[in-house]
Image (tube, rainbow, N blue to C red):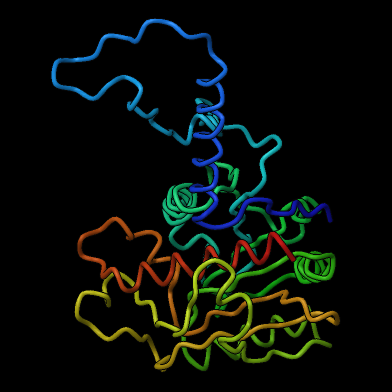
Amino acid sequence: MRLRILARVGVAATVLAAAAWGTLWAAERLAAPAGPEPARPAGGPPAAQVQPIFRRSDVRPSLRNPSADAREFFFTRAVYNSGYRWSSWATDYPKADRQFLIILERLIDLDAYEAENAIRLDDPNVRRFPFLYALEVGDMYMSEAEAQGLRDYLLAGGFLMIDDFWGTWEWSNFEAEIRRVLPEHPIVDIPLSHPIFNTVYNIDEIVQVPSIGNAQGGPTWERDGYEPQVKGIFDDDGRLMVMINWNTDIGDAWEWAESPYYPLRYSTYAIEITINIIVYAMSH
C-alpha cells in the first residue's frame, strides 16, 4: 500500500504557515526598491504599519472544481454487506462525511478531497486509502471476498475506524465478523496513554456521543450500551490497525455539529478524537 505521510500536523501548522508567509512577505518588502509612501486614509496608521492579511488560500488555493487527483487524504467510508438492512453502511451518508471534511479543512493543514469517498471492501482500490470508516457494524455480514479484502487492507498498513453500534447483541455480531478478518489478533482495550489520544488533541476522557435525538435531554445510551468503550486491534509490530468506538455515535456529532440543538461537549469530543485518529492513521 502506498501510504502518504502527513507532513504538516495539527492546528499549530496553520499558525506556522502564517508565520512563514508573513516572513516571506516581509523579505519581499525589504528587497523592494524604495519609493514614495502610499497615501493613507485620514487618521489611519502609516502605510509602513499596515500588515498583510493572511489567507489560507495564499498557501493552498481552494479548487473551484474539486479533483480526486494527487490529494493527501480521502475520507473513505467502507461499503459492506449487511443483514436486514442492505444499506447500514450508508447511515448519515453523505452529510456526516461532508460536514466533517469542512471541519477538518479548518483545523489541520491536510490536503483533503472535499467530497465523500465510499468504496467496497472487496474492491482492490481500497488499498489506495490509508483511512477507512465503518459504522452500524452490529448489522455487518461480510461476504468472503469482503472479509479477505479487509484483511489484506489492514495487514498492508490500512487503518479502520469503527463507530455507531450499541449493546451486547451488536457487539457479538461485530466480534464474530472481525474474527473472520483477523482471527490471530486479539481485541484489547486502548488505554488513554496511547498516542492516538494525544496525537493532536489531548483526550483524557471517553465521552459517550449520542444521536441528535438523545442529545436533547434523553439518555445518551441505546439498547444496553450504557458505557462507552474504545477497543482496538494491533498488528505484530504494535501498530493500531482497528479502533473500535462502541456504545457511541461519533458520526452523528459530525453531521449535526452546526446545529444549535446539539450540545458542544459531544461534537467537540467527536471532532477531536477523529482528527487524532486520522493523523495517527496517516503517520503510522
